[in-house]
Every structure is written in C-alpha cells, then in structure tokens.
Image 1 (cartoon, rainbow, N blue to C red):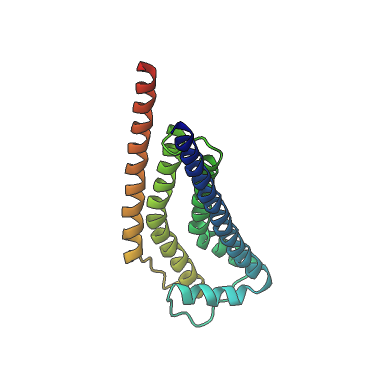
Image 2: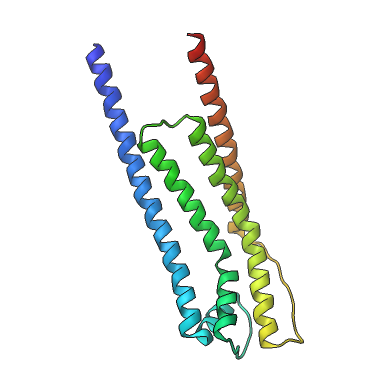
Length: 192
C-alpha cells in the first residue's frame, strides 16, 4: 500500500515538473518574441525612420500627414514606445523564473514562489498605467515633431488595461495567500 502512494506521489511530481517545463518554454518563447519586437523597432529606427513614424502614428491613431524623423528622433520615439514592451519582457522573465523554480523542485507553496508570483502581479498592475502614459507621451512627441504649435497630450484607458490591473491585483493577493500558507506550513513542521 505504501509503494502505491509513493508511486502516485512520484507520478504527480513528474507531471508538475513537465508542466513547469512547458511553462519555462512558453515564457521563454514569449520573452524572445518581446525582444524580437523591440529589436525590430530599433532596427526600423535606424534603417527607415520615416516608416517608423508612419507606423507609430497609425498605432496611436494620429492624423499626421508627414513626419520627418531623423535617426536620433526615431530611436528616441522607439525607446519611449517600447517602455511597456520592456516591462512585459521583465514580466516574462519573472514568469520564467517562477516556472523554473517549480520545475527544479523547490515547490509550489513556498515563500520564494509566492514572492515571484507577487512580483509578476505588480508588474502586470503597473503595465496598464505605464502604457497609458507612454501612449500619451509618444503621441504628444509625434504631434510636436509634426507641428510644434499644435502639441496636445491625451490619456485614455482601454478595457484591457482595467482587466490587466484587476488580474495583476488578483495575482498579488494569491501570492500573499501562498506566502502565508507556506509560512504556516513551516510553523506546523516545527511543532511536529
């Protein structure tokens, strides 16, 4: 009877490790895609600043006729625009570390895993307001470069931003619960 319980435990551990390995691979792929996207924008800044200006104006839904960008201004615009993507890449790195820690056998309900989950949640919460501010700054900058007399700054939230904030806060709360549960488990082990 004990042999069956040990075998079930090992099977579950193997499944957890396999699922965590898949999480490592998917988060690595997402991280690579985010970095590839950033590299594309930086390459476009250097190779074709005018195309980058048109692309950004279209993404920001700006009605700008011609936008004469230099390489330096295109690089600046790219760095402003990519702030949110760099945050998303950092979040993917945190998620990868979360899955790697689970895969390595450190456990799911540990203080380290809870801390990593809280960090993912906080980055997700911050992405939405930073995205709104970045869009406003990028739009104002592009409008200023198109017409220095007609500068405006717009902020706007989208439905996805609200969902990201709520999901991030839920991950932070779940991380706190997991941390408290891990702490309680350690205290219970000490008493036994």
